[in-house]
Image (cartoon, rainbow, N blue to C red; front, side):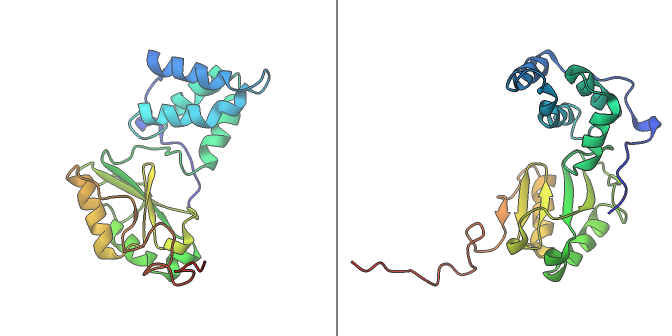
Length: 204
């Protein structure tokens, strides 16, 4: 895992402000919290700022959210740099791939997923592909260990991957026809592969 820092100055926009629609949405989120606890809304506000900015969170947006919540800028920066859900530099326009690199995924073939990322996107993480469509990074556990190896792309997870099925996932985003999220094998969510093996009948 690399140290998480904001993008260099030459990549940062000079300013950021929520659209009128997102400002109203943000006010409603802040109003959900009791007096004195409005800063608890920072994660949904940062997330909305990231979505508005095309998938990544610039420093100006972090400051904007901090000002809305009456927070010191450094406090908001601490949150943005802690959670890998916040992308701190420009990313692919069609998909940013977060590959789980913890033990269960590595034991079940995550290296093949990394190899595809290096081949199709860029040899190193945190770089946008030559066509601007994709970017990737390694992250810690994404909470689907039983379905390892897996990746997170935007809001969805793609699980039980092989190099071949992951290629199809990328092709889907490239062609504007993403495959169905979740397990990429014949498995229902995190249920056993092949279906249930116990309690298959109920006695009267």
